[in-house]
View 1 (cartoon, helix red, strand yellow):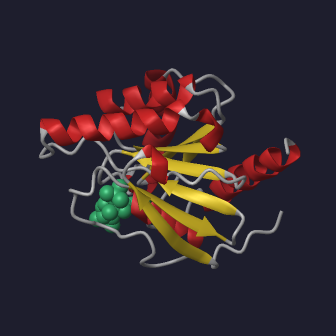
View 2 (tube, rainbow, N blue to C red; view 1 turned 30 degrees about the horizontal axis):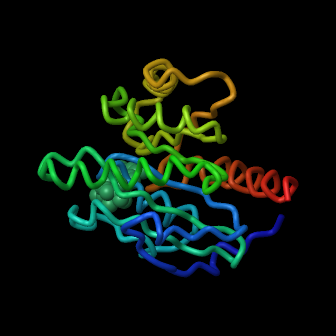
View 3 (cartoon, helix red, strand yellow; view 1 turned 45 degrees about the vertical axis):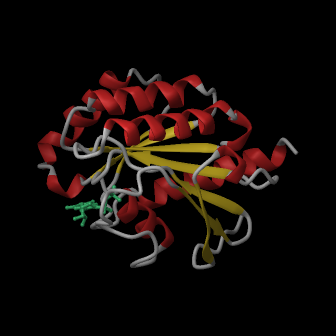
Length: 202
Ligand code: GDP
């Protein structure tokens, strides 16, 4: 399936379930702790510089941003988690919103869970991993900031990510560098495969 990634537009920020688009278009959802490079990965995937904002001040932790790509696909940007300065109340609002999103499994075509290639997944990452595993939809893990690893660290770090998140063989872990571009083709392949799978079911 051809997908013109240049044709991308912001659609809306959702703050409650009634705001979630529920048309027939596939939805690819991006999730990760704040500062993992989620905006940078989205920009790299789309081949854009400043589409999703990089280094955006944390605070909009309770907004789910929807982008429409080539009028064929929603790219869903879940708010980053794990930011230390967020209040308990805001954390709770975040949890409720994400829970509502995952509860409606019809919304998700593919999950893209971002982790930092340098580190073992955090407790928050593991919780997010459980949400992805539990919803029964395909997902991939993107290990970002690959450029910060020595060559000898890559394989052991990827294995640690797989092991800590308890991923089975069907879940891809894609080494990625938003900075250099590694992994873009593989991520794009997963997105296109999920889209054509979603089309087959209609
Ligand atoms: P977000 O909070 O998850 O959206 O993260 P951002 O996209 O704003 O990135 C957080 C910081 O990490 C920024 O300073 C980025 O330049 C940096 N960053 C993101 N991806 C990479 C990467 O692949 N390699 C390196 N070295 N830095 C990255």
